[in-house]
Length: 335
Image (tube, rainbow, N blue to C red; front, side):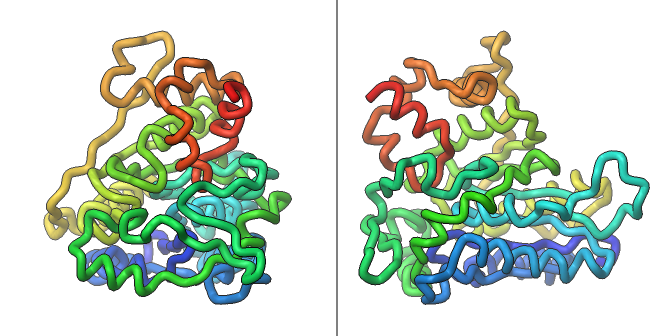
């Protein structure tokens, strides 16, 4: 559909762009949306590939669309969220611009990821200590998975399919994770965001996801929050519902109907997560407590002891590869 934006998909660490194929097939074949999935240089078997290389790959895909006058929505998963956020710098439409209304990045869809902080590399907030799920191999220059990938990424897929996707995993450059903070950018402050949370996630627990959404909202982000009862990879285990949320996001970004809702079906339902308001405790129930703590973090940059109780040390350790500076601050305060 020429009047709808191009969707640029950014995968996470160790993942090829083919991980999005189920969703992009639905969006393109059933709804006519143009979808572009990029390959991150840091996952191509080159230990010298950097975070900036990944950003440049995303920016090239974005630029090829915007220079032709097409708007873009960037969709990013896990580590790819940091790439996607940083890549949109300079591509968004200034609020006071009198320029044409097309040829810009108009929104972000973030899937099971954090909210990038300007000036910080992926591992900067965590003092260079990787989480239990992966380790540093200084000899090869790659981050090596320790936790079985099926358990970490695909536990809700049938065994045979999960093993196929495990076989598709590739290497991940350490340089992209530990360096390049000067290129990191909080793109989520510049455009509206739709966040897809993953309730059964064993890589980035949903508690941390909700806390980060609350933090981003308090820091000025416009975040619409949905959750799916899935693993870290909803585009594989629930592609129909994931596609439906993406269509809703595109409609919200453009004000136009995107696709044919009647052709979307799925075995799961998305949950809309309301905003938690600090001084209205009745908004805290079910989802709101971690969201409320995120608001506290976003407002003050500090995490109080109650959150430390909610998120014990062994859980916090599992968050290090994905969460933001907030969890590092918490670890420092209660150590």
